[in-house]
Length: 150
Ligand SMILES: CC(C)(COP(=O)(O)OP(=O)(O)OC[C@H]1O[C@@H](n2cnc3c(N)ncnc32)[C@H](O)[C@@H]1OP(=O)(O)O)[C@@H](O)C(=O)NCCC(=O)NCCS
Image (cartoon, rainbow, N blue to C red; front, side, top):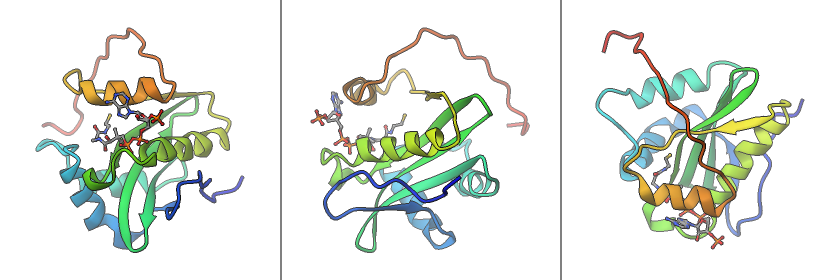
């Protein structure tokens, strides 16, 4: 199984796995993109996603700048993406679509048949994005339970 990142063609961008040194810029990007929440620790999320073979964080770089990111992982059947973010100054150039394709390819290389993602109900804008790139909304009720006591 290859661990190289498929690079969709977006002029001037390079796609790769996040490295240790990317963590502060990743968290800053997620804050600018409005993805962080007080009850989640983005530093811990990055460390956990990069720890094992079943998940990773992919980044799109423009020169030395972090243009976007997506966290991707799987549970053996379903693949999931989280923290898809494009720098607000660079949105609308195809970077979000390219990162999603890179995540799809990462999952496809591991024979994962389906990609899932959660959208907060008030995030109308991102629903339009996922519909535009070929995702379908599925009526599901999500149950959850915190395991960290928060
Ligand atoms: C969602 C996000 C990642 C999209 O990234 P982006 O780089 O701006 O999107 P792209 O330029 O790749 O857009 C791909 C396509 O989606 C379309 N699109 C984007 N936003 C759209 C919207 N709100 N409604 C309809 N279509 C939309 C684009 O027009 C484009 O279509 P085209 O290729 O036919 O022109 C970016 O807006 C973002 O970081 N948002 C904040 C963070 C966030 O909400 N993340 C998702 C968490 S679930």
